[in-house]
View 1 (tube, rainbow, N blue to C red):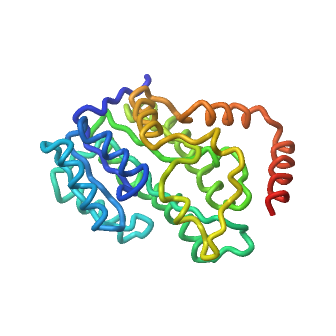
View 2: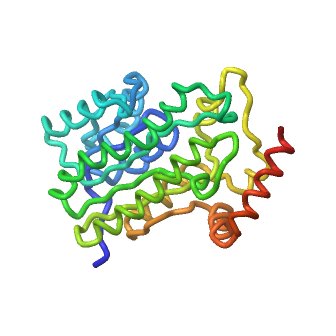
Length: 272
């Protein structure tokens, strides 16, 4: 049985809700959802988003929880908020993410671990902790923000790409496990988007990664979010927003791995 889920009157938790796609998810959900819980580290930014949402829909029950979900204390704070309030979670959006641009050998060890903590550990542990609540509120949904980079090895963003490969694979496996639970699981795998992610991912020297050809893949935040939310309601396993990203994902599925590595190596050496 294919799970069915409607966003109308849903109760949604969004991580990484203080910027980028997280803000856009909140903005598009504000007219449709009943409850929104915004989670991120920066309380001031969360309060600004909260004010924006109430301007869109004064009847929306919007709350903020300033917490770093990459830490056990942060995740426990989110769980405590849900358990101690009337928040009836039935839609979890794991949006928080972190990158680092540069070769692995020169990467800061703490930054490497931070990427894994945010992109993998936080997503897995928060999903595991909240799954019993989602089961009580069925039909429910989980949306994990992955990336097209997860479909290929990415020099100069090796850990980020690997963590997103994990997110996509984990999401598809969890979708299978929850098939008969009336809980739909979706991974959205966008290409480059106009968020603050790239600025955060740059190192102190300010160097960027090789962006040749990325214009073909770019989609505005509102398009990425709209397609992701439609995919959730349709019960889709993966969403690749935009023609360019869909075309690249199809190519990556048929391209021999050795040839892909050869092409990426040539590109990497040329940019170096």
